[in-house]
Structure formats: structure tokens, C-alpha cells
Amino acid sequence: MTKHPLAALLPLLVPCALLGACFVPTSVAHATLRISPSGAYELDGRALAPAQLAAAIAARQAGAPSLVLEVQASPAADMAAVRAALQTVRSAHVRVAFAAFAPA
View 1 (tube, helix red, strand yellow):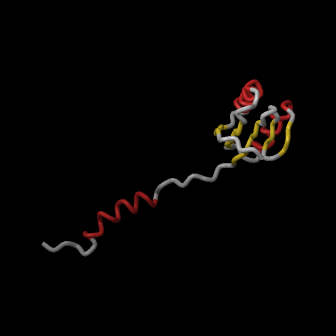
View 2 (cartoon, rainbow, N blue to C red; view 1 turned 120 degrees about the vertical axis):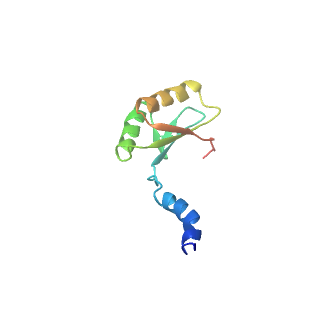
View 3 (spheres, helix red, strand yellow; view 1 turned 60 degrees about the vertical axis):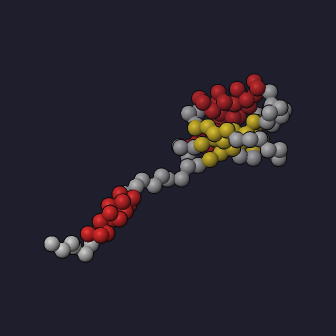
């Protein structure tokens, strides 16, 4: 019995068919919240008073519902300022990523 000419390709065709059906995620919007050594907030390069943070995150999130907020807190920042910022972020239901603080 002779094999079909494409029989040798079958082991390659099955994985290719499976990979062709793979899900490709959409890009996710990112924002950066910096907390300076003095405890000052900066969202995407714009200085904010602590009372403005929730509204600024909500405005940023309105255009990007799956927003990821990268938090860059200075090691010298007052932990109360960091905790307050994280509580605001948590209340906004935004995903958080932490990154090293680099002086501007």
C-alpha cells in the first residue's frame, strides 16, 4: 500500500492548524504613576494633588477600560503617600504593576 504524498506533512499540518487558531490579545493601555521622595504624585508626567488622583485615573481609564497602572514609588517616599495612592488605585479597579523608581 502506498502512502498519500501529503501523509509525510500531516505531523506538521496539525500543529500549524492549532497555532492558526491561537488567540492574539489586544494591546493594553498603560499609565505611569510616580511617587516622588516628597510624596508628590505624577500621572503620565502630570503633577497631581492627592485629591485629584482618583479623578485623573478615572479619566485615563474611561478611554482604556483594561488600563494597567505602573507604580514607580521612590524608596524615600513616605509610605502613607504610597498606601493612599494604592488605595485609590484599588478603588478604581485598575491593574497594577510595580517598577523601579528612576529619578527624573
